[in-house]
Image 1 (cartoon, one colour):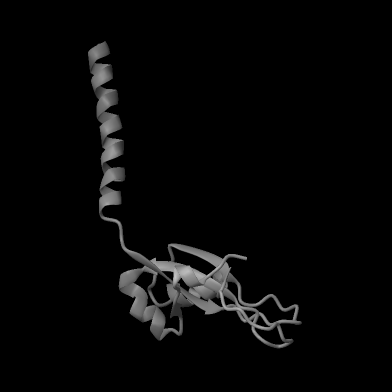
Image 2 (image 1 turned 60 degrees about the horizontal axis):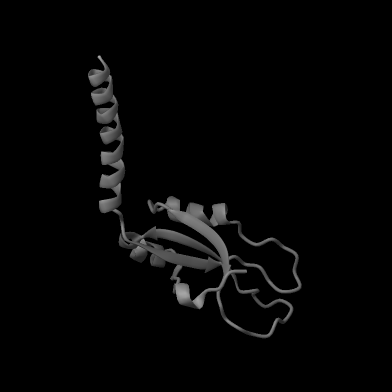
Length: 116
């Protein structure tokens, strides 16, 4: 009886591991795209939220794997009315990059963006 229980538990354990491992080997290559969030210096308006802008991608059949607020990495003078450099960035499958570019998003070079 102990042997059957031990064998059953081992089988359950293996069944749980196989799908997790299979998902890792078939991982999709990803890239990041972004758009400015619309915030401006000297203006307290919050800009476009991550979730709201993500709907542009989702509505076009692009799965958003992750999202974050970040900074475009450009240095410049902070003049009232000028963009703050705050952007909404989204991780998507590389196969959907051209579709995102058609929607007005730009490819995000990880090295050129800094966190805020």
